[in-house]
Image 1 (cartoon, rainbow, N blue to C red):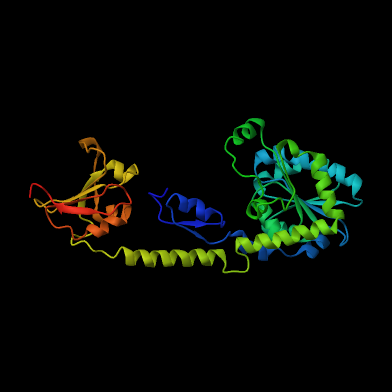
Image 2 (spheres, one colour; image 1 turned 90 degrees about the vertical axis):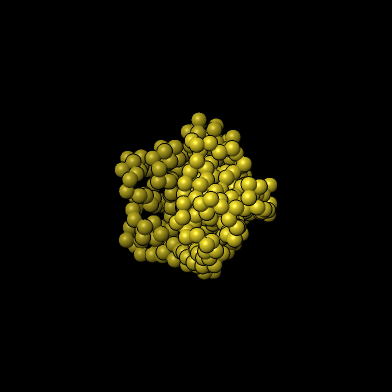
Amino acid sequence: MAHYFDLVLALFPFEMPFFEKYGLRAAFVGHPVIERAAMVAGGEALRARLGIAPDAPLLALLPGSRTSEIRFILPEFRAAVDLLAKRIPGLVTVLPTVPHVAHLVRAATSDWPTHLHIVEGEADKYAAFDAADVALAASGTVTAELALAHTPMVVGYKVGGLTYFLSKFLMTVTHITLINILLEREAVPEFLQSRATPENLAAAVERLFRDEAARAAQVEAMKEFGRKLGEGDEAPSLRAARVLLEFVANGRERMQWKFPDPPNVAVITSRGVVFGGDWIAHVSHDVSDGGWQFHSTKPLNENDAAIIGLQEIAELDPSIAELADLPLGWRAWRDSQTSPWQRKASESE
């Protein structure tokens, strides 16, 4: 990636050192979900419209928006709600969904154990966050939205057995929920795969309905999450635009054209340099025709040769701007991609 990209706009602060470790410049701009936090409103109006009493215990269900999530997660959520209905008198549930899985959700909830309200649309989703006392959610971006809405939650997630088996060899994180990853602790209860049982989910949700201290602790953690994510600072979209404008302006200054040749003059290089990520090790400025050649450490053959513009090669490796004054008949080389350029007259001259 470092060969092809000049800058990464990072959504999370922990991403910057990861990219920079590989030589890729990164700038933290914040997660765009922050800008959606202002949309969390209208809870009282939603309760009134759906006929939910102001003091009725309301649980928001967010089983995901993928077909596989509806298949694997919603049945566990239903069984958990069945247990909760026996423990929390008058429990009402609201389930925001999206059009492409709404029919699956309605089919899977036809015999729901509590009063259930299925809502669609962004406005009703955020109103449901505002109206709910607690949420039971699948892992995903929605957990960040719930955190910024300060809605106490429990997270559960299940996938197919083969998918989970393979994922164990790839996962390097301790937690699966964004707030827990960023805070580096389990601020929100999360249950993955075999632990995502109806009993575990119901017990954790019931605690949030009954234990004010547990609710308050989550809300404080959610506020900390928001601050780390950039809440209260410049909006992520504006910060991203500013970073890009500064990057372009600085890039223009850095890349002010220094070569005596025009930017579109043809130069000889290799396909490995252009497409394969090979670094430029040798440069020559031919006295016979004034042409430029840029080659890697690999021997060049006819099948590997490529012709591109001088500006294109300069964008691939900005360090060659140091060679703009390389005289005709001279060559330059370096021992590694980070070594300084050395130069001398070609021996044939």
